[in-house]
Image (cartoon, rainbow, N blue to C red):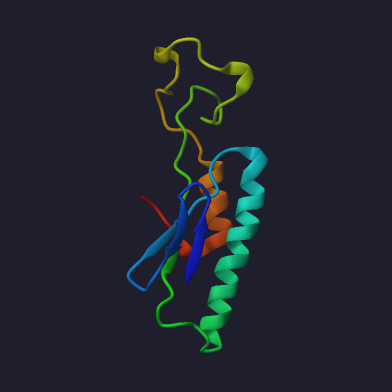
Length: 115
């Protein structure tokens, strides 16, 4: 598998020794698009493997769960209108929900790994 990586100055050749980690991030403007694209890639690879068409040198792919954010807001996520003024105001004192991590598991199921 060959991937052109923007800004890397060339072509990156991937082999069966490589693991490609995917994550859609937390930014709402891009997250939905990334999830949709990653889902298509992983489905395509899975279908090719099921048909016996997988190349033996394809790298492994895994989707990494989006980590929980720790902002001092109801959801624990960054909220522009409540952006912290001081560093001490940034972190929540207790765990919050992780909507994006839950969405990752919902979409990618067993393909999701946590780091």
